[in-house]
Length: 242
Ligand code: URA
Image (cartoon, rainbow, N blue to C red; front, side):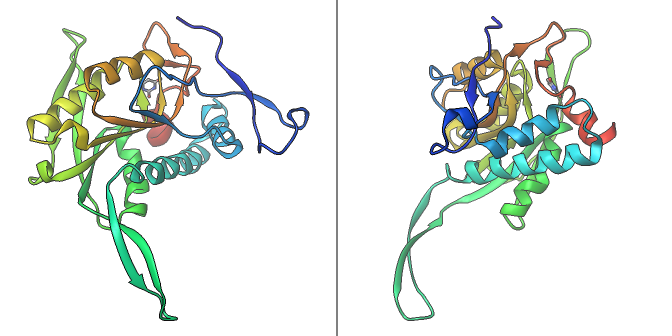
């Protein structure tokens, strides 16, 4: 169903609604646990407005999507486990902090997911990154695994799965099955995504309920060619070639 997408005043809470523009914001998807939608801040909405615009050229598309990817990675890392960690500051006082516990790796779903690798590297120095290539089989029109290269100890790592567009969910679900077949527990997978369709997000959450999804936006729906609408067109084309 393509119901009217939600509109919201965009801006800080303390500013009166009359001084804030109205914009289309993410569908809430309250009925889908495990999906975490980034706060619909003025920054995020402005960045998404840039990359959705068909008149935005490749250089700007890359720059603004990188900023959103950075937000996704930073939020995604909040879902990894930390343990208490006390340190001493240069003035001799104790600070009770935390540190990350456990090894991580990235896995990008080629080609579009590779666009998210740099954002992950910028936050996690020398992170290992694997790749999965899934393409639609021309005969069956089902997604098919063509190639994978994953760290051999991936079963002992938390996996940040990278794909900017979650349309039908077919590729993401197949990628999760590949990871599970290599011994990664579902609950150690975190899927980072820019724009999801509501049907894709629901199907994904139903089939792999323990995988956490961090997304910037749940859009209105899918068109007859399974493009996300209003969407931004083909992410890989806009990032790599157009
Ligand atoms: N992949 C894209 O790049 N765009 C869509 O709209 C859907 C899938």
